[in-house]
Length: 203
Image 1 (tube, rainbow, N blue to C red):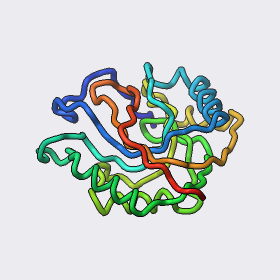
Image 2: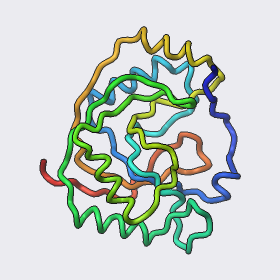
Image 3: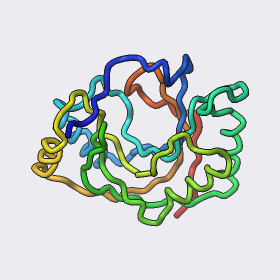
C-alpha cells in the first residue's frame, strides 16, 4: 500500500485565506537528540518533501487559526481563548518532566519518532488546555517528532524495510517549557514562530 504524498500546492479549502495556524508544542533542545533527528532526516531525504524549514518539535495541542475577531469558522481560535489557557497553565504551574524517544515509525503521510510520555505529563497538560478550548484535531493523540512528509507514492513496505535496516537510538530528555506558536498556513512545512512560553517549575 502506498504512502500519501504531500503535494506542492496551496490548500485554500483549508485555510480560507487565513494565515496563522496555531498550536502548543514542546521545543526540542537536547543537542544530541537534535543531531540524531537531523541524521535521520538526511538518511531518508530522498523520500521526504522539501523544502522543510519547520523545527523539530512535539505537538501538544492543536488550537486552530489564531484570530482577533469573533469565531467564524470551526477552526478559528481567539486571543481570548489563548489568554484563558495561559492563565490556567500559569495558575496550575506544572513541574518540568521527562520524555523518552522510542522507535522510528510511519503515519500514512509522514515519517516520525515515537515519544513515550513516561509520567503521563503530556496527557495532563492536554487535559488542562481542553478545559479552555476544544482541540481542532479529531484524531487520537499520538506524541511524536515528525521527521518529514512523504513526497511520492512510495510503497509503505519499502519504507518499513528501510527503517529496520538503520541503527536506531533512544534518548531521555527534560521538558522545561511549553510553547504556543504559529506557522504560516500558505507555506508548506514552514518554520514555527514562538508566540508565548510557559516556563515549567523545578522537578
